[in-house]
Image (cartoon, one colour):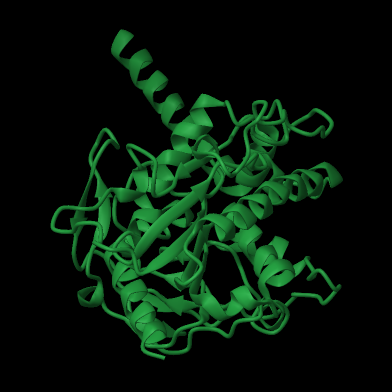
Length: 371
């Protein structure tokens, strides 16, 4: 009797787990909204400490003169470059998950620690070619991307003001005779598209840009690209151009992206519905390319404690599909617990191709300097 009761309990638990898993697959977005979208009204985040500005090192996660600079990390077998040939402006992705505020306070320890980890694993791909500048900013919380509430747009606009201020300070402090590489991920890439569109396009700074890595954010080829002031990177040797990709394993459930994308419009009101997204394959550097796993020079694979990463070559292939998503095949790698619903490898957009991004930046900078 006891054994039978135990088996019924186990069976019931299995059924509950299956139902929970199915509910999560069907209603993942609703669950995420309930857990992460702030229920408070938008208000401007606390100002930086008195006297703090982007002229000061305390407002940067990475800057050439910062001790313990996380952007100087490299995988085994690599080392930061010697004399910097370019200045890299990097905008980190969302690291603030709290729903008590729409924007992150700069003294929020947990989100700042996550931001340092992102700079370490993503911006480090560029330390072979230049000195990296990565600002702290009062980023919008993750929940701002899960709702169409007006407060979410206010939070994103508020975060952009910090990014713009940091970029202006970067231009004043970085050597004026060096090329610039722009790079970002996710929320950082959203702000980078606005920076390109509103501040850089048509300005003298545009002539200094060797490449712009707008990763983990959809760019409509027909509706968005023209306003950025730079063309797409069609070939691997091209400089002064834009790269973008969004990584999914197969089968890709990209509805969380396409539903929002197809319902959106550009700043001038042009609808994005049905338009293809820019996809430059990071394994080849070619727009809409297709490459086998053998072309992958190295994926960052974290250890169990997520405290270190080793570089694994030939880990995944990559191909751009007809809509503009980057697919890495069905044999997805185990990179940790942060794969999003729909086989979305968004968090790992840089880690999947770390060594190839490094080689790509080197190649495009060499082209730019040879002009």
